[in-house]
Length: 153
Image (tube, rainbow, N blue to C red; front, side):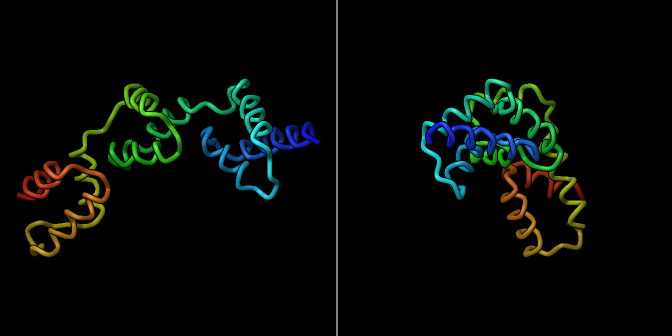
């Protein structure tokens, strides 16, 4: 019976990885939360199997994620999402080192243009709203203030 569950866990991992990449933590959680209750040994065996063929590689996942999201999200937001997905701090730093990072000021300007923000016509409440929006996106306060002041002067 244990062998059957091990085999089913491996097949489940392979099936999940057909559609998209997962981190090791995400796969482990998927196996734990699924309809079938796999024993810990079966989960460990299945993850070892897919890792041995490099189907699951957290370093590669982090590098691809950073490369894809670096023009859309702040560094801090990308880091937090990768940590949530089970990527270690060292792998996140390596991923950022491999990728060419877009300056934060450019990203802020892009968001200001996308949101049709005009500092000349905006009142204090609108400026505060935009500041809070950009802060929630993970940008630093000094860069936000600088962009709001210098972009439209």
